[in-house]
Structure formats: structure tokens, C-alpha cells
Image (tube, rainbow, N blue to C red; front, side, top):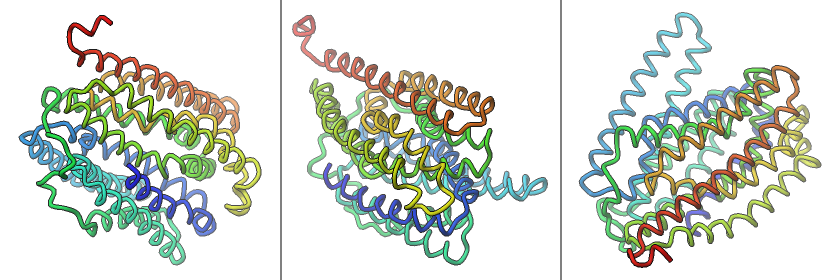
Length: 409
């Protein structure tokens, strides 16, 4: 797990380090457009990839090529439909057409990287996964700054991410993926074939999780405009830095350990969750405290003039981000133990509550501060409910793996 965290740390630290440069090169509107496109692309890419990175570690060798072929067809179909839609929409609005193509390109690249992650996690090729994660962040940061010095538009930000991710996938040296790592346990199925309603529920939960984390951004864009959305986008970029730096690496580590325990039929998932929570809580506390201090005393000086609202948003969001950092890396357990429907219901409730409430507050008050306060409280409560429900379900999974005579004790 340390290698995964280190790779993410290097890559994402590079992206975060260039933020003060980007805020001086790009207008808030361009950053807001890029961030909105990225939010939509994450959701679309989950549909195309069917989130198989969360299920590939626990499927059989016979199921794997079927899943990969299905996802390959989805990505090709996504690209064809998206580009066709862009051409058709261009008849009415070139701006909407440009945004459509932007989302399609980002979605396809994100889906390709998702498939690559699932295969690497399945074979437990941690070194290759860590190198790829680091390579993406460094490449994207360099490209965004270099292109922004010449042509600072939303497309320049998109191009940096697309080029960085493709370069990372294509240039990372890795073992022969047909042969799992010697550390990988037997790859056997833990449930029915993945597809149909299970895939739809898993994708739905992932899309809703993404939307809920960006609900404030979308509600701000709808009620206060692209300029205010740019302020929120930069604040969320800073607020999500700890999750981006270490959370994704920890999530991949959780997936590795959980899939190993599932395949070995050892009833230790709840003990693993407690260890992960104990590791994440101090990280989340320190990170949220630093976010609060940065928002109160330092963010505007770092970003440059004109970003005072971003500083206020960051300070308020630190409360909700504490819960997100402590809980979200462990939500990968839901699909691994085939609880996609439960996760879907939790994410649906959180997303609807967050977006509807922040939209209503923004529409009635036109106040970004009150919108952010409401969003932060809902995020905290939502993730608290998620960890409670997940612990209950994991406890039941462990109990079902005990010998029959021990289940009553």
C-alpha cells in the first residue's frame, strides 16, 4: 500500500503544486467550465467502463475477457455517439458542441485508465500501478502550465489531463498482465457473473458519489454562474487535495486487501475496516485542520487577487471533507461484497439531498457562503451514515463465513 500512496502522492502533488500558476494563467470562467466538464466526464466514464476496476479483482479468469470486450465496445460507442452529438449540436450552438466533445474526450480517457487500474489491481502489480499514477500527475501538470502560457483556455486544461493520462498508460512499463503477481491469491469468483442489474447499480452508485462530491459546484453554476463556479472549483481542488494525494492510493490498497480476504473466505473484513479507519482518522483530522487554516489565512495570497470567495469556501468545506477523507476510500468494499444496491440507495439519498438543498439555498439567498455551509453539513452526515451502514454489512459478511456452530456466539 505504501507504494500506491507514494505514487499518488507524487502525481497529485504535482497537479496541486501548479494551482497557483494556473489561477494566474486561466480565468475563473475557464477553470469553472473545465471542472464542470470533468465532473460530467467522470460520470459518463463510469457508464462506459462499468466500474469494472471495482469488480475485476474478484471475477474468474473466464469472466475477465468477456468484461473487457464489453467495456471496449462501450468506449467505442461512447466516442462515436459523443462526437456525432457534438456535430449535431454545433448547428445550434458551437459552445455547447465544444463542451460536448470536451466531455466525450475526457470520458473515454478516464474509462481507459479505469480498465487499466482494474487489471493492475487484479494481478497485484503494485509497482506498475504506482509508476503510472505518478507519471500521470507530473505529465498533466507540466502540459497544463506549458500550454497555458501560450493558449490559456478550458481546452488547454482538458488537453493536459488527456495527454497526461494517455502518456501514463502507454509509457508505463509493467509485467506481463496475463500472469498475476506471485503475491496474488487464487482468482476465483465470489458471486454471480457481473453484468446487467449488478453493473447498473454499481455504475449508478459511482456516478452519484461523483455528483454528490461536486454537488456544490453544479448548484453554484446553476444559481450563481460560471464565475462563482470557478471559485468553488478552485476551493474544491484544494479541499480534495488530501483525498487526491493519499485517498485514491489507500482505496486501491483497501481493494487489494479486501479482495484477498474475500477469495480466501477469511472472516476478517470488519477488523480490516477498523484498522483502515484508525489509519485514516488522524490523517483526515490534520488535513481538515490545515484546510481550515489555509482558507482563513492563506489561500488568497497563494492564488492571487480575485480569489477571496474560494478561500471562504475552502474554510467551510473543511468540515465535510474530514468525513469524506475518513470514509470514501473504504466504499470500494461495497461492490466487492456485492452490495451495489445498498451503496446506490445511500448515494442517491445523499446526492438528492445535497443538490436540492444547496440549489434551493442558492436560489433564495444568492449567497455562496450559505450554500457552502449547507453542503459541508450534508457531506459530513452522509459519510457518517455510510460508514455506519458499511460496518453493519461487513459484520454480517464476516458472520456468514464463520463455521455454523460459531455464528450464534
